[in-house]
Image 1 (tube, helix red, strand yellow):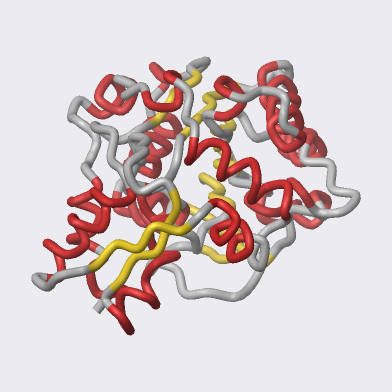
Image 2 (spheres, rainbow, N blue to C red):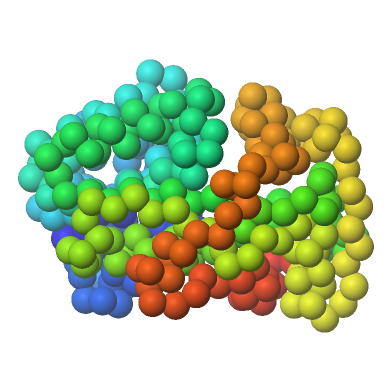
Length: 279
């Protein structure tokens, strides 16, 4: 049995479906009740309270660990989740980390994630670590303005990074959970090309079949909007990457193709599949 945390999100949902379609017994874990594919067991649990994962981990052979905001919860100790997995007899863990532990290792959240990576490696479990860069699905931040005004408003319109399709992250996670050959690997996951916000706008317009305007925000305007949805420190950190990505953050990684045997999906692919969110 394989346990998938964050099972109702944009990575966990396709991962759960892929594992179920592969004939695996799957337990989907989320903080709130949610619909899951037929035959998948669902458990409500809060990762900020690792002891509560016991019922989900009972009988599990593998764990996909996606922490999301739980990493930052007051008093949270994500290393306890690994300890709980060891105690319950889990044999393999696949951790969703971030490319930032390599490219910008000294931020508070990335120091914590690097420490968790170390805990995983030292746990005695089989392991793999996934380090994605920016997500294509972050474009959903623009969905309302595209629906209502046919405009994307974003900073740094002509500065890009190779955003990755969450479905590709899920596919790599499935491979790491199911195939022994990926054990002990740390995989940097990006899309196949650097794409700017202006380029993403053009891809959304093509998917919609109608024009979408691009309005460039100042950094201050973008920070004000982002700070309503995330801590100001995280907003500043994100804007630093978007505005001045390093060469490592603009590098197209070969790791998705190495694992899956195909090129990663483009942002245009993602836009076409998710166009209904923008209609």
